[in-house]
Length: 335
Image (cartoon, rainbow, N blue to C red; front, top):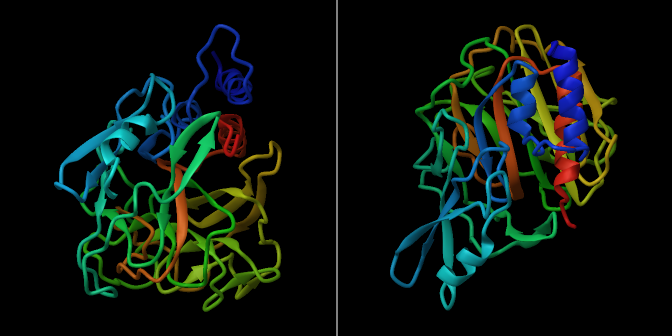
């Protein structure tokens, strides 16, 4: 098939027109768009149609035993019943979020960092239960002092290489603290200066840049600055008021883009900014670690909720972005 034909098929599948095909996951859509995933993390579901492995690892307090929570079926949702049975009568912590991509970039509880000066706690595995596609699942509910990272990665963009990423987050659980991030960061949890990280941020921080109104906004954490675009106030970056939010960041060789939308509503994905980076951020000096829930130097004062996210090589097309968002909507957050 020609690339345009392949993409049209993926968009149709993402929107639920399955016919004889199994619905693709977000990483299948990115692959069809020639921007393959190098990291795919979720507590909720498989992000490839063919994935049937573990999603995350929980440890219970009573005896410190651990078990992996896997999908219930190939390409399916998390087996939360297995977690409930394992954690019955005690508390459980998420200690690892598995990378579903072939790269093996698993997220572990973050160690000591330059800002936090202590190892990060894992999230309470049973704190936040919800339904997605009619299945009971759990999200990762960050309450401050919690974070994950992978400092030794394979395939993640470094230097000025292009990349794309998204996460699905809770639209009403945020603050202005630094930094509820998911994405590319320093490999040693220290601040190496402007341009040494590139991660999605969700919240209403306005210390460096902000969007229109009072937030919350999808912004880019590119180290020593959370940016809503090129300018201190980026009017095109409007707040997203939704229960579940799709947040996207794409980093090119000479600029970046931010998108956001209601993860329950098709056609809602909006381009919030696309253009050059702020002064002193070009070229980028990305180091290629992966963080979740914290800043690159392990700043851990933010709160937020993470459901799923991926990172890819290359600058994804608008058609790919739209197909991925359609897939997220079709997954059925809150339904």
